[in-house]
Length: 273
Image (cartoon, rainbow, N blue to C red):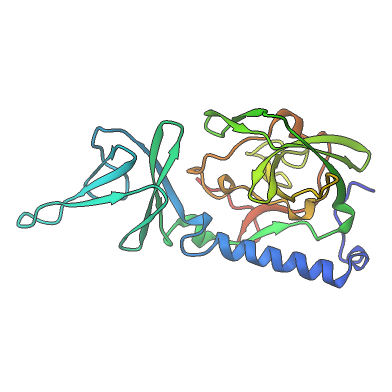
């Protein structure tokens, strides 16, 4: 297959059902991302300790107490300060703000989400390649035996995560063994390709992307659909700490399928700050 994106004229090669299913997936992705408290609404991830400190955009002081985060919010001189407790796994509302406790290893952070996020207001779409069934490949899953994967996150933190296995796939003549972790009854793959080498350049795609692959059948067979590759949360906010692709998942080819970049009303790539 030629390494060029599909054109509208070529898209007749895809069935109406294939295109309709992809469009429904794309719309669901966009709706979830731009929901009032969706991915694009995150404005802060603040790592806290037992020492009280101020958090930008929030009143009072905040600190860690055991496995929870506690905020001491002053009201006025007549009324004592109010205590707000944020437990992991629950959302706490404060005005139009949602507060979440986010744990990583031994550390705990306070996440702040608001529908007033600059990113949420600026983004109007997630640019994507035209869906093309030529980017759907059969794959064979090879389960890992008690193997862990050292995953580096975008902020340099490294954590170990159980490795589900490897997905062996022939991508237009290039054999790859993509490492995959569990994602419910599916596999999660983080990959990079030659369309997004430099996060500061006007590349075709974000510097790496995520992909969810259906669980293999009893014979180890599954299908990888690169049309469903999507921009990771850190493509919408620097306050996410996404995993980077493992070395085996850095492909020496151009994957011209799936989501590319968030865009603003002019259609230009949106660069968050």
